[in-house]
Amino acid sequence: MMMKLKSKTLNIGYNLDEWYDFGRKVPITIDISPATNSHILICGMSGGGKSYFEQSLFYKLCQVEDKGEYHFADFKGDDNFQYLNNCPRYYMYTNSLAALDIVYNRLKARQSKEDLTRNPVTLIWDEYMANMLMLIGEDKKLATAVMNKVSEILLMGRSMAVRLIGSMQRPDAVAFPVGSRLNYGNIVIVGAVVKSIYEMLMPDFMEQVKSRQFGRGEGVVLMQGAELRFFKVGSIKDFDKVQQVCVKALS
Image (cartoon, rainbow, N blue to C red; front, side, top):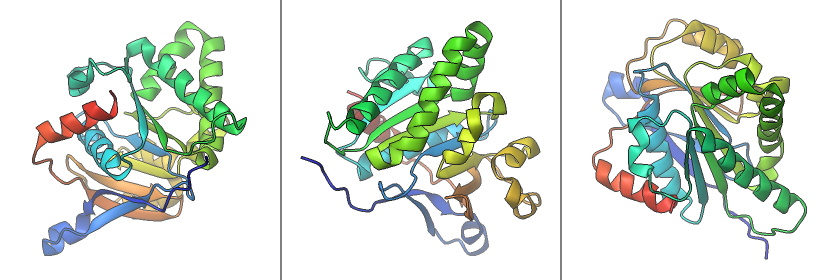
């Protein structure tokens, strides 16, 4: 039986100006319901708080979508997500392509009506850009096939409740075929302003961003290509609980 999901929002942090100017915690939320484009692109240079934000986002997503199905591809495989090592739906280094295939096949099954469920299926792909650049250097044919699958998920995933969350340091057009970066409903940039990142991902908003300064765990989110917000990631008070929730979601 096909499930109809209600509209849901996800708190990604707090309004940066309200935080500093008035000491108020005013939440900034994004719509993650199937009625909207809920794909998320996360960028940020090393030391800017990208991984911290990513874990916070994953934790909150698990709480909002408790019946969701999650797959986590960790190409870099460093200590940030080491606690996920024994989870069956955690895919490290080159196993990231196995995660993509599983999620892509779920999309195709839903398109063919073989799978009539609509519980959210989410692929979180950490260091997607580094993964793609490695593939391009080693096997261009395989890299093209992989990027085509990613593009199809971005184009068709919305109506099938299949979501991609891609995380990387600096985006490169070579790994975004046919302008697929424009198919992310929410673009998040965390940490210090790097002009080239903003020029590629949100060129129409450069005037609003260029005078800003962001510390670790602070940044900007562009929602549905039209609404720009500056935010601060809230602190995680109980990191053990965050880890437990994320481990359960991938087990």
